[in-house]
Image (cartoon, rainbow, N blue to C red; front, side, top):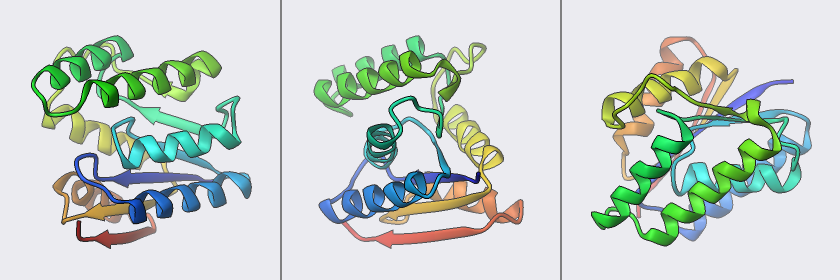
Length: 168
């Protein structure tokens, strides 16, 4: 079994991006491989949702978080109060990650020592996605720096990378 890293933009997406992510993940899970992603909104959320539908025991899903689920949930709720994300987005993501952890606690890779969630810990999370993956499939919207960081790390390790670029 191969682990395919899924990287993508969390801020902005489109119906085309969502359809492409879901199709790619369906193909990965149905052929018996697994996904590794970062547990964020939009691309990560779509990928996890699609994989979880096909693999409800979550044995072919790995989600790397920059902190514990409890801290990550608090972070997203705080970000909704700052109007960076909606409360609905935050609660849907928290519910998804909680369900995944309940289905298979090993599917969620948490970092209990990280007390701050910021660009540094997100980019560390990107490194972990790459390290756990055999190859990377990136859905890059508007030249996202986080996706580019993940792509660069995968290429530096000599891992196969497929990049799908979008302008939204």
